[in-house]
Image (cartoon, rainbow, N blue to C red):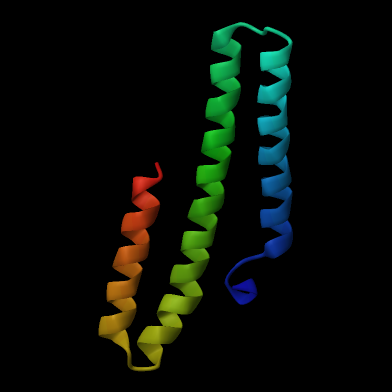
Amino acid sequence: MRECMESKNLHLRLRKVAGQVNAVERMIDEDVPCEDVLIQINAAKNALHKIGQIVLEGHLRHCVRRGIENGDAENTISDFIKTLEHFSRMS
């Protein structure tokens, strides 16, 4: 997996999401208006989705390409379709 993406970038993005989730928890404890909490939840959701897109792109550029180049196109494409379906359900 490490060859598929820049792990440092992903770790930075994940820490940002963790901070956003912690902020939601604080906002709830501080009785912040619902609209503001929902905005923060949406920001965390979008940031996590972007991380998924980065992982998916890395998977396509490296793992899927390697499978096709090694002559296993049918299985590689079939597996990628399943992966894409799982990721699409998360949106």
